[in-house]
Image (cartoon, rainbow, N blue to C red):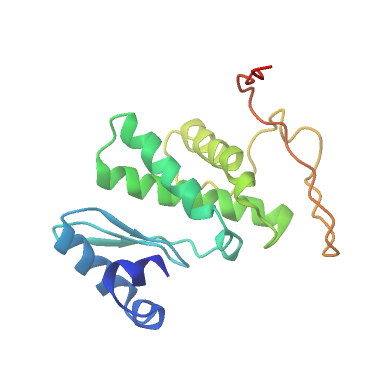
Length: 173
């Protein structure tokens, strides 16, 4: 829907030509464009385009794109080139979604992604750049407790993971 608003096209028109729409917007704006979806498209202002090999239904959830943007931003802040940042972020985001879908199916929440993305990056670093990251990661404290439990579809809430420690705000009483 967001790409349709940016381009003035209907969602159906965008979906009918995802590669062409992403390329056109990238060329017109001089920006790197990421069109999230099954087989996410990354387009560069010079007309090159890349398609993610990952099509993971578990990433079709509210907030997933926000997490992807955060990964791109973190890579950019670390000095990674914009096109490479988009490519790396799309890949680890997709790999994290695939890893989570093994345990959670399509019940992945955006809040599940940051830790899974960190694990995907760690697997890549551990393997020295080996791109086969779908193999199980070595046990980490987050996974050592056993497999994740998928919540029942009856409205039961998923157990919350502990948040990284954040400074607590003091009340102004």
